[in-house]
Image (cartoon, rainbow, N blue to C red; front, side, top):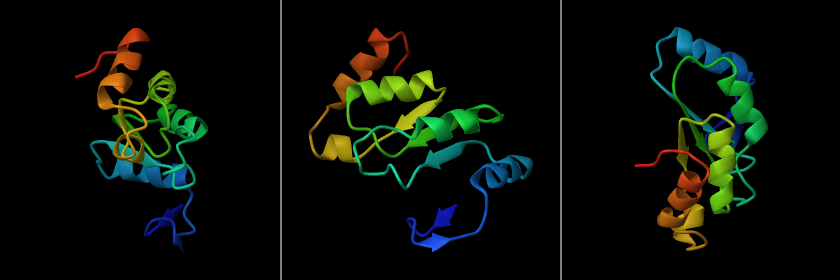
Length: 110
């Protein structure tokens, strides 16, 4: 696990730290894969599924969305919420398109 935008190695195991954060009473988890962030290659589904397998709190997936279908993949992996920036700033996909893809796949949006 890293901090400072991926520049500093903390020598912590991400999964162990997330478990500890829950023990300390966190209300939700923002899971941002620095390796995927800004790549437009999709959310880190493997990490998301690992976190969801033991999380007792809502999980927000962040980093990597590059298509409307990436939001569907993140939701199917169990994300309670999906966060994206580059995809919208670059105009590659609109928020409405991402929501439409989610609704078409059977997921509720706001």
